[in-house]
Image (tube, rainbow, N blue to C red; front, side, top):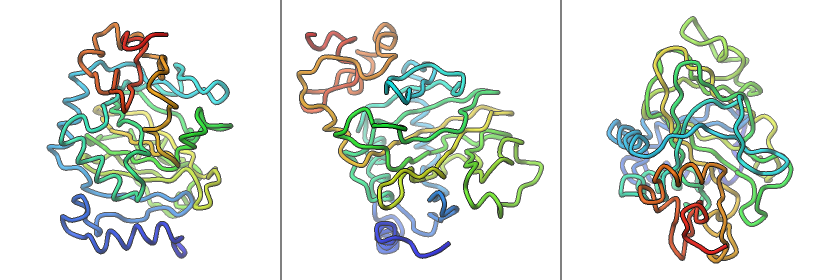
Length: 292
C-alpha cells in the first residue's frame, strides 16, 4: 500500500519496540493496516473481555440518550434520522480501567491523551444505524483552539451475528475485500469491518498534511441480528482539554445537557457533567455549577 509517512512510521516503530505487554499493553502483531485510502488500522484484541463488559456496565449505570449529530453550519448537536443509536459519555479517567484504556489509545495513535474527547459508549439495537458521514466538521470546527478531529478509535464491546459493520464506502480496499453471505447488503457497499468484541478500528479523518480526507466517509450498517455495543474516542489536532478559555464560562456544550441533568446525571456522573476548576465539565449550566 505504499510507504508510510513519517508520523505513521514512527508509531509503527514504537509498537515494534514496545511489543508484548509494554507500551500500554499493546501487541504490535495485532495492529494491521487494512486500508491506505483512507488510512484504517485494525487491532484484534485491543480490549479484553472484562474491559468490554466494564464499559457496557458503566453505560447501563448512566442514562442512555438518543444519539445526535453535529450540524455542519451551527456546530450544535441535533437529532437526526441518520443516526438512530443511543449513547452516553464517560468522564475522562473515570476509573482505573477507563484511564488505562485511554492511555493505550494514546500510545497506539501517537496522539496526546489531552487531545481526545470523552469516550462515548453507544448501543445499536436491531435496525439502528449511522448513515455514512465524516468525523471532521465540514466548514470550521466549533473551536479554533481544538482544531478538527484528526483520528477516531472505534472499539467493539460486543460481537454482532449479522449487520452492524463499520463501512467505508470510498475506501480503495473495497475493490479487493472478499465477502460472502455473512455480510449485510450495507457492508457490500464498501470496505467493511465486522464488529468483534474486543477489536478496535483506528482511522484518520485528515491527511498527514492536515488537509481533510474525503475518503474517510464511514458509517455503521443497520444491526440485523443481536445488538451492538461500541465505544468511540474522537481525537483532535490540538488539546481538547484546553478547549475553553477559562472555567468561568457558564454554558452547556451538549444539546442533551438539560435532559441528562433532569435524569440525575449531575450527581451520577459529575466528572463529565460538572468537572473541576482545572477541567470544567460539559453541562455546568444545567447542573447549576456556575453563574450565567
